[in-house]
Amino acid sequence: MQAQLFAKERIEAQLLRLRERLHPHRANLRRAALFIAFCAFAAALVWALFGISDLWSRIEFLPLVLLLLIGVPVTIVLNAAEFRAMLEAACVPAPWRMALEVTIYTSAANMLPIPGGVITRLGGMRAQGVGMKQGSWLILLFAGMWAGAAFLLSGAAILLRNALLGAPFLATGAVLLALSIVSLRRQNASHGLIGKILLIRITLQLVEMARLMLAFRALGTGLTLAHAAVFAISSFVGTAVSIVPAGLGISEGVVALLSPVIGLNPATGFVAAAINRVVVMAGLALFASVLLGVSARPKKAAALEPKDVPPPA
Image (cartoon, rainbow, N blue to C red):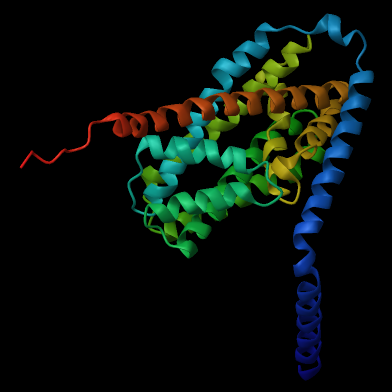
């Protein structure tokens, strides 16, 4: 017993020493990770583009327009609804406008070489009076719900084609979802609220799958919803790897790796996922500009209002 305690103390001391040594270099390490991720993503994209025959003659622009004008705003609204449900779990009301602002800023912050999305959501929750500990716990539980739903959908879709590969995905999803639901119940979340959260999350997964279908369609490749479900975990895995901003290259790599499961060229899968990323980023930039313009208008109007002038003596 004493030997185990001694070993544990030694390990903890070594980890603490390593952390102290790395802490001053953390920003440089993250910048290096961003540079490496960008180079790897660019190299993989070039490989994928050259791996698709007659690419430019196959591109269709209508799916891209639908992805930008329908897929992106629906995703923003559903993410805002999830954020409102998160605050509801903390027994705090959340106006729609604030939830939309936090959602757009969260998506933009995910591109920073820090876990910007988590920090932005925590900031939004603190502004509404939710403590750091409770906010962090709720973000973790909602991430568990996301992971559970994603792995369940991917597992079910893969299981139909490869039972050996699909079963672990399915089991992982079931465990994560069950643990998250039990933990939310212990946080006094009602059955109705948990049902709402599940509905929002599953709808978000379906929208993500539909966006990928449109991206594949833009490359001249048609997918069914059952095919697109194979890739349900790609977005979560990319976001979970926080050292790489917004999972740059990670989400695309997951789609490429899983493409052969449904008989697709990995290069096509990578390019389709990259198209989805680029269009979503463009849509977020567009809606963020609109949001900033709307937010600035009341301030401008207030600045133009005549100031109170004291009456003449």
